[in-house]
Length: 177
Length: 100
Image 1 (cartoon, rainbow over the protein chains, first blue to last red):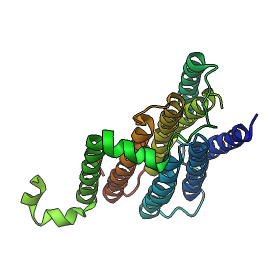
Image 2: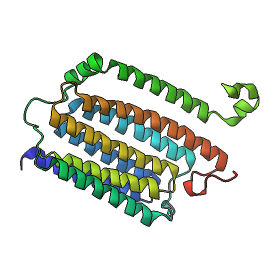
Image 3: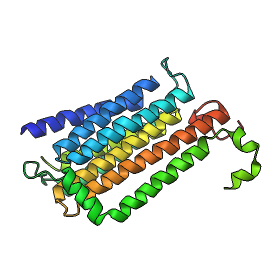
Image 4: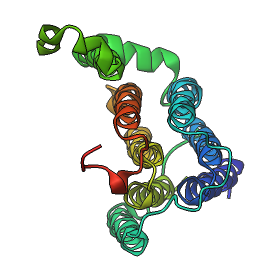
């Protein structure tokens, strides 16, 4: 095994282990912090697969922004300082079954379909910022613009949704927009 | 590096995400399960793109789009969770749906 393969193994185990902790820990804030570990080690996996730009975007957007938003949501909805024994529902056995079945089906299909194929990680990097930027602004401009409109719509929707209901109660006609 | 390693990693992450969405009681924790599933899809996209050496780099570009959409999703999700908390006083997904 090469160094890259050993590192990929370690990062994969770290990602899966911390992902399990994300969905099982009883501390709400700890779940968000374990999510940081998972997303960070996935960024490392992207880096090892020579997708540099995606790795840095993952660090910036996911670890930087999304986790902070999740922490905001946790802090705003309750004081998550004490361990909360009731973080799992009664459907836990069904959920374990569904998760295992999903993993098994996906894993069997993937191994059956792509056994023996190898990723070339020693050659030229597949995802430098130059090549990805070139592809986005040469071939995927339409998708890029659509995504930016979706982001704008989502932000406007978030503002409308999170306005206090008292704001609209004074002016009922405003709610139709 | 064998192609199946990242694929198996993504299968495991997806299963864990499914478990998180189904088993968690807190709505924010269920959203974290969704994030795990989106990341599993991202790992697949990047792995296949690097394996295939696509000229249009479509796998990685789609990964960037997915990351942007995940940011939009989490923003909207946060707004909905806040609205639920204001209406019901809790975000326990098992007890939602009735009269506040």
